[in-house]
Image 1: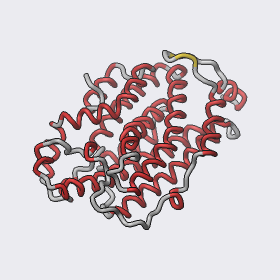
Image 2: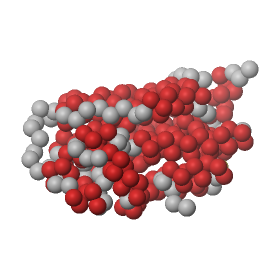
Image 3: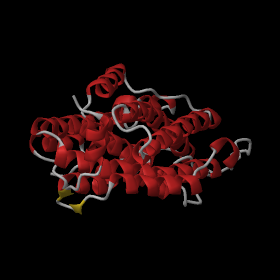
Image 4: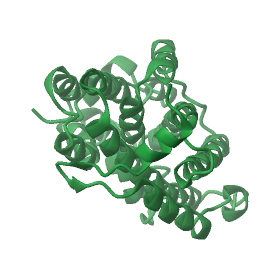
Length: 315
C-alpha cells in the first residue's frame, strides 16, 4: 500500500527527459499560484456585457473561419460571412465548455491521491476555479451573441464520458493540452484584432492570460508522467492522444453552423475538408503542441498515425 510519505517523496523525485531536467513540482506550482493571485479575472465584472455590438465588426477573425478562401466563401455576401463567423464563435465556445467540464473532472481525479496541502494540489484547485469561470463566461458569450449553443455529437459526448472515466494520468494531461493549445493560438490572434467585437476580444484576452498558467502546469506534469509511468501507460497514452486529436478535429466546428446561415451543409463540409488554407490554419495552431509532444515521446507508432489522420499533424 502506498502511504502519504511515499507519495510526498515521489513528488520531489529528480527526473530528466529529452528537454532536460524537470523543475521541482512544488516550486512550479508556487509560481503559478503567485501568478494566479496577481492575474486572475472575474468576467462578470471585468467585461461590459450590456454594451451594444458594433456594426461592421466580426465575432471571429475571418481568416480563422472554416470556409475562408474557399469557392463557397467567395460566393458569400459579407453579411453572410460575418454571420458564419458569429455562429462559429458560438460553436467554438460550446466546444470549449465541453472540454473544460472534462478537464475539471480529470484534474479532480489527478489530485485525489496527492498530498492535499501541497502547492501542486492547491494550484489544481485554483485551475478548476478558473475553468468554472471560463465555462460560465463562454456560456454567457454564446447567449449574448444570439447564436445557439452547439453541442458535440452524441457519439463524441459519450467518448468524452469514457475518456474522463478511464484516462491514464499522462493521457489526461495530453488531452488537456490538445483542448487548450489550439484554441489558445487562435485566441492570441483574436484579442488584439481591432476588427473584432470588443466583448469577444475581452473574453479571449481573459482566457489567454489564465490559460497560459494551465498550459504550463499541464506541460510540466505531462513531462513528469511520461518519464515515470510504466511502458504500457505510455503506449496507451500515445494511442489515446491520437484518437483524442481525431475527435477534436471532427468536433472543432459543428456542421449545423452552415445550415443556420443558409448554406448547403454537405457542400460546406466538403469544401472545408478540401481547403488548403483550413488545413494550414489547423496545423499551425497545433504546431507548438505537436512539436512538444514529439520531443517528449508521445507522437510515436499508431498514435502518430492517428494524429496525421486528424489533420493536425503533417505527414
